[in-house]
Amino acid sequence: MKRFDYIKPASVSEAVAEAARPGSAYLAAGTNLVDLMKVGVAQPDRLVDITSLPGLDTIEWLPDGGVRIGALVRNSDLAYDARFAATFPMVAEALLSGASAQLRNAATVGGNLMQRTRCAYFQDPASACNKREPGSGCDAREGENRLHAVLGFTEHCIAVHASDFCVPLVALGAEVEVESADGKRTIPLGEFHLLPGDTPDRETALRNGELITGLKLPAHAAEFAGHARYLKLRERTSYAFAVVSAAAALDIADGNIRGARIALGGLAAKPWRAEEAEASLVGVEASPSAFARAGEIALAGAHPSGKNAFKIELARRIVARALTLALEGTPDTIPALPASPFSTRPGDQSGVAHVA
Image 1 (tube, one colour):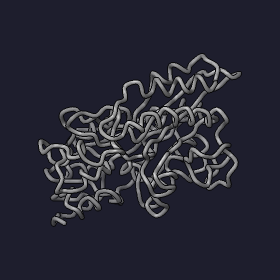
Image 2 (tube, rainbow, N blue to C red):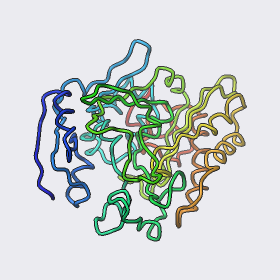
Image 3 (cartoon, rainbow, N blue to C red):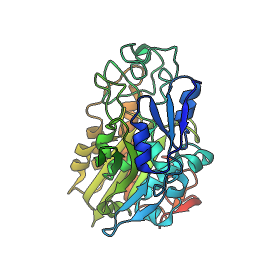
């Protein structure tokens, strides 16, 4: 590991001033950053430790019914917050489907948004990777790429974003609050992560020195609480990243769909919201054919980046499956295996977190 300077600021203003200096990186739990430093992928000159900054570790309910989540709130604390789980159940389910209990106890909301791709070529300094070293090439294109992107990729990068948490957040219209020496601003989460284009090394909309201070979910997102699920298909049942995942939520009245939210994970360099698929459901009767059509629309622009054509059909089916389970209703408890697409009824397993 490269040697680095360590700074522990006492305030947000001090932190952003320190991080504006070249070669700086923020350190919270470090569950992803430190791993990358160990293998030489991340090589910051200075670490700015934000773990003790005041005011960033609270869940604040807003007067309009929305919620603001501090960037240092732990993933497990958020998932097990009873009011949050009841109001935004598919976000809680996504959180509990990710990593392990030990990592969820350490990982933070802000850090989850900032996690890097798990592409093996990105994590191997001996491999060509335009994301890690611009202009070097992309060994994944001709390598082991069955789990890589089918949406939004370019010849420069076919990596996917790894987060579970961000998928339902994008579906529900979350916003990211950031601060720098130049002031504060809010970024819609759908615009926060960037597709690779010609600059795959630029992964987020953050400017130099900006610090994520919080995350907001709007009050109207709670309208979907009664019919919301997150599903995650993975190669083993725990401690694995998604091959394909889907967040689906419905606002139902008399069997007809008044509103829908759909987002996909594991398919692109960012969580992928399927707004055209959502629109196809509004005003129609909830049915298997409507859900299958939504899956087709959601993947209309998909094509393989390598040996991964199977992911396209898999994603179509998981959209339909997620919508079907959402229609059945949000379970009273999150299933013992959160986000599993294989249970026949959403409430037929012993739960680990109450959502109602």
